[in-house]
Length: 130
Image (cartoon, rainbow, N blue to C red):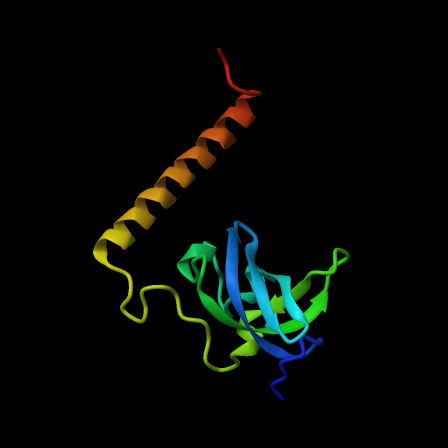
């Protein structure tokens, strides 16, 4: 049931244009022209996704299913529904991540955790003290 029309239920090819904490924005390749769409973080993989960058990078090609539209006219998309039974592999599972990439990701995630802990601690204290 693959369609190239971009209608709800259609499975189309897209290019990742931006990553956010809550998902990724893509440009859909449809006959009527390029359209923006959002793949929410919950629609990336069947399991828990902590970091979108573990799965995709800007410029990646992705196969997505159109599952709806938001009030801004953007397509709401799902990568996991477009690839049932296959799952979406994490970056590195196919051997493309190097040790340096893994180390950079570890350092970035560690810094993010430390910042979150610091914010949480300051919030409990009533804000930053000077």
